[in-house]
Amino acid sequence: MNTNAKLATLATVLLMASVWAYANSTSRGDRFQRGQLLLPNLILDEVATIKIVKGDEVTTLEKRGEAFTVSEAHDYPATNESVNRVFRDLVRIELEKEVGRGADLAADLEIDPPTDDTVEVTLMNSTAQEMVNLRIGTSVPDASGRYIQRLDVDDAPIYVTTGGVFLSTDSSAYLKKEIVDHSQADVRRVQGPDFEIAAEDPESSPRLQNVPAGQKEKTIETNKVKSILTRLSFDTVFLADDVEVSDLRFDRDLRVDLQDGSSYVLSVATRDDRSFLRIRGAHGLDRVEIALDTPEEELREKADQLGRADEIKEFNAFHASWVYELSSFAADKLKLTRADLLEDDADG
Image (tube, rainbow, N blue to C red; front, top):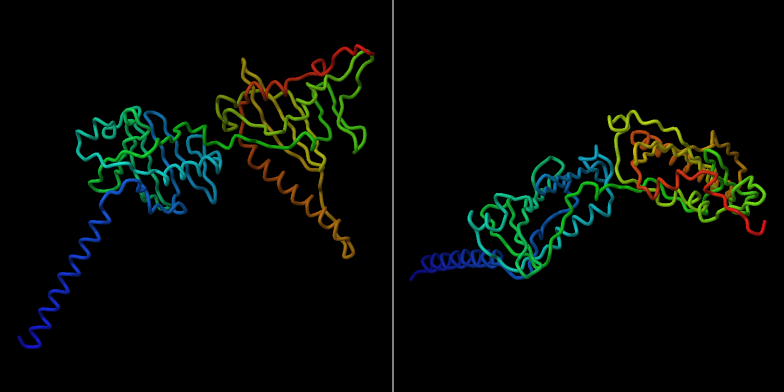
């Protein structure tokens, strides 16, 4: 065999070997391995829409800037924790085994067609291109796993997950329900409809004013009033012009002044056994004067004041659009009167 023939034969052998090696590596890559992830290559930073559907329940999370909002709640902000929980639960889905393909199997496992118990998850990027579409079917009898299938992958098999997969389809579970959070120690004064709680001097705690002889402050109740801004949260949120709340009369105000000079006015309306809140902030800062010889400590203080004034401005710009329905626990604090804050003084 001449040299050229030998080289041609060698080239053919090398080509066949490379084809075999590629095919073998591909088949190894496609071969199922227990414990492998369902979504190993998901790039979370590219996800701009999360849609979770179960029967008639739908939650759509849309990325606005750096945060997500809940479409079903008129784009009210979602908590970072709830969105991160969805991402975490998706990327951690491990597969126990492959169970097969086919329409009959998918129907038996409540994957296709979906039932009221099927959970479907769709992830899209900022250009509305589908990144992931999967369905979670029935639970595995006598085990914690769920049957699951990707619909965005051609001829994808149905798998059993290693553990349970739980994704809430209740849109309210994703809402950022905390309106404001200031500790009781931050409160300088509270002005209610018929009472005032105020500190006598900067070093003392706020107390109920004008307590009549023979009575004393009921501290358990006044502490409730002073803590009204501590993790103040809502149950349900409405746009301010929603027909369900647009005709409410917010005729009861509670003003809370803080140590930093800012304040909040909480306006309450009631209908039947339900209580609703509108809230706005205020800051007494009109302008800040700075001279060349202003001490550094004073400059920092003025910077804090300006920052706080900006916070209040942003707070009002956002919350002016919303009406909040409160839990009875929060509403009861706002409904306390002077009579509720007094008790007989046995020693008086």
